[in-house]
Image (cartoon, protein in one colour):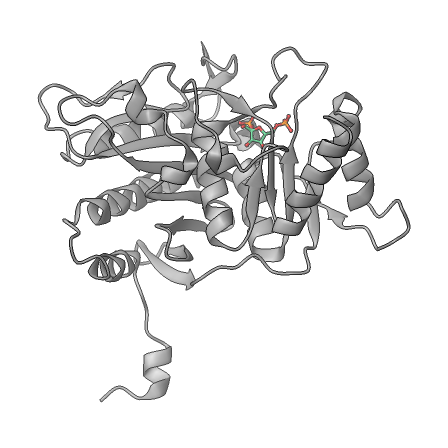
Length: 343
Ligand code: FDP
């Protein structure tokens, strides 16, 4: 019979964890379970390439520019294709959307469609690839709204509040997968020796007090008065409290992940100077909503400075939004400053 000690030392693979969660939904068909497992598999395949990113055949850019006007790198394309190919034929998805593609990605005619919608940012923070700095994959899963047949754009344009599951993979010192289906946020670390994600961070809650703030202060002069005053507040410039430490990687997943585990706030506000960023830089559907869902399920909060990110109904697939995300009290403080200063 297992002792209390062996019970404690139990190794939980991601497969077992997802299956256990499925058991608490008696009506579940297993489609979501399999979908999450396929995303974990995509992560392993992508991680196998990111760890070789210094090697000649991977580095070097292609000449293509994606629809965000950014230079597409080979690893982005690999990650994008890997996720699509591992999910296009399973009969679990009605439609997909990728941050790398302007339009929705239909399921090829030869394969059946299913009841879920998968939106993903295949390699977030890709400007960091060349410098061996962590990058990540973000994913968002919704239930389709259309009845049957090929999925539609409307299936993809849902507010974050309707998410069924969301998560991310971070390709860093180790590869981790963090996900939630609304029943706690759980983190798994890839053991490369056995090729399995093992539960390492069950029931993550954003710690209090927060330690860090993360923002690109290089753009500060272009932020609104409210956001600038909020930044002063974080730095303790009113002399009322000690300022938080600044940490900014410039890979959203890495910045978010650190603050999720240590407490803090990440923000990317609107930029008054850059005509490309009047609503910030980050994409609502591919970045802000899924991470907002994770933050909320870990006791935190995400806002565009005015309202809960999860309440925003996207109007377009690549819509951008300002984002403030992390400890609830800090994000609410940002909202307070922004409201006071009218921007
Ligand atoms: P990147 O341009 O490298 O892909 O949304 C993309 C993103 O990275 C985020 O991961 C990151 O937080 C942000 O942009 C960095 O933007 P700045 O370079 O303007 O700080």
